[in-house]
Image (cartoon, rainbow, N blue to C red; front, side):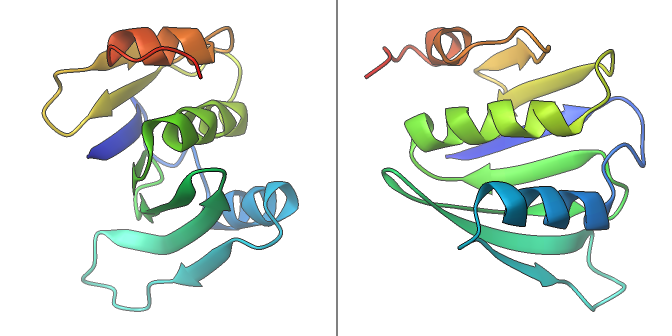
Length: 122
């Protein structure tokens, strides 16, 4: 399933800050710049996690991170994404069908994310 972290404003997440923070948190992460200016994505990434890889992209406008992977890994990744944002920046975590949707705040927990998607913390 595809998941998204979306902000209300554009240019909240810069490609350089995203890359630097990701490589600091996950040194084995692969991050590639998307060189095609017609693409809606500026970066593509793959992060080795506990249950597999989380792969995804950062959009050119700096307001959306799309990713796919195991829900447990994606929940951890989502909390990391929240740390990239300014403290009061409104953000949403959702799946592609919007069947699961959560206001993502600095106090959001793994339990909050799992609850929205009907999973339990393992």
